[in-house]
Image (cartoon, rainbow, N blue to C red; front, top):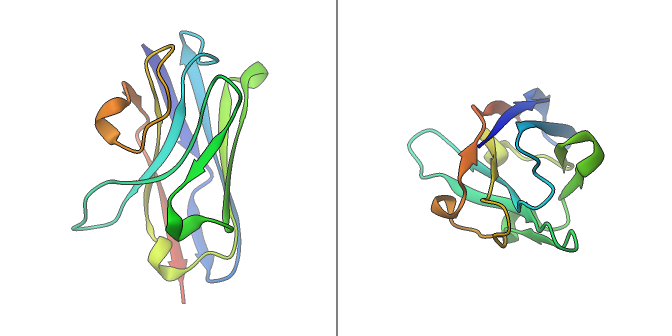
Length: 125
């Protein structure tokens, strides 16, 4: 099991940027795919971005392509989500997640084994 702690959320105006961090502890996460998901009030949790463990390939939901960037630093056991050109509709609780070791990335929440507690992102218009 890996423990995940997100940070970096907050209140920003539309068009501004935030960088979320997710620090992992416990088992090594270098062989886990890492994902970011978000959940707005009254909505299902949705996929935002993922980064594979084999070659750090990245994958994005269409609604964040060109605006968000996921990256990982295995030496620091940390994954990041750089969010630029934020929009009010990006307002949600953002969660990071880790797959089981050796698993590929997925856009489905149930394919991730470990989750952080979430960090609130609020974008004002």
